[in-house]
Amino acid sequence: MNILLFGKDGQLGQEFIHEFGLKDQTTHLLNITPVGRLECDLADAEQIRTIIQKIRPELIINAAAYTAVDQAETQSELAHLINAIAPAIMAEEAQRLGSVFVHYSTDYVFDGLKKGPYLETDLCRPQSVYGATKLLGEEGVSKNCSKHLIFRTSWVFSAHGSNFLKTILKLARIKSEIKVINDQCGAPSSTSFIAQTTIKIIEILQSQNLFYGDAPKDRSSDYWGIFNLVASGSTSWHGYASYLIEKAIEQGMGTEFALNPQNILSIPSEQYPQAAKRPLNSVLSMNKLAQSYGVVSPNWESLVDAELSKIKLNNIN
Ligand SMILES: NC(=O)c1ccc[n+]([C@@H]2O[C@H](COP(=O)([O-])OP(=O)(O)OC[C@H]3O[C@@H](n4cnc5c(N)ncnc54)[C@H](OP(=O)(O)O)[C@@H]3O)[C@@H](O)[C@H]2O)c1
Image (cartoon, rainbow, N blue to C red; front, side):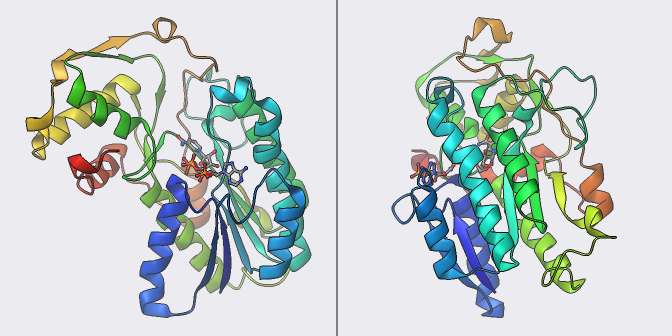
């Protein structure tokens, strides 16, 4: 299969390169073109069209995005180009080729005021420029490409790249006390879970003869569209940080820490002002993905454990 991967240097992009590499060791059937900023600047529509028309992929995965949530408040034009316009163009080109287009979105499309887990059909009311541009990206993808999968995920972490997990591990080495928000809740979701599940879904589509050819009108809504893709369970940023440090100590990293779990102080969001407003409730329901594709998501703690064991403390850069 001919695959074009945008965002090769990001957290999720790196994971896809790893996972596809493992798959290809046994199948030898994958031809992947990983693309980063150097090969294609997503702010330039022509560059996007040119690379897709040159590679003619059967599958396009867009793991790229403008993810600097606070900076987006002042760089809204750039965030709009990368998060709203670029995916719409990719989707248009995918449709022209009859290809499948996989894209990622975020819990930040919601206002966070719902009392339970968000369903895919719940009203979107983004509270930030980042969330608004990601929502426009979803709309552009849905409108332009029939065989699309948009996975909304949350609190993404991995052993590579920058994320909350690695920030807390770094702080633990230099600070004896930290303050972490306790009133936003969500499900930390690892890139390995997200990439592996995406690949599993592509394989299901292939095995059901849905991958190639037109999207069948009668069954399409079960298989294509927007899906939440997150770990099960939920916690606050404070709960996440506390669990992480306890586990890291259990795994032998504690000798390097200045911080112990009791000194992770819990604070409300208003004591940690940020440029972009975050949803208080970021919990997404996994029912649709379970029904359509039989995906059972592991709990967030097990994903943290697995990723922690890949991290050597001196690699936390
Ligand atoms: N991170 C989270 O907590 C989170 C939560 C919910 C949803 N998501 C979504 O999940 C997906 C993957 O996120 P991630 O955490 O893997 O993101 P990431 O690590 O920030 O990676 C994003 C990638 O996009 C690339 N990019 C940005 N602007 C570009 C441009 N103009 N041209 C070419 N490439 C450009 C970046 O390139 P450089 O490496 O060159 O900067 C980077 O490699 C995104 O759709 C994101 O919105 C993320």
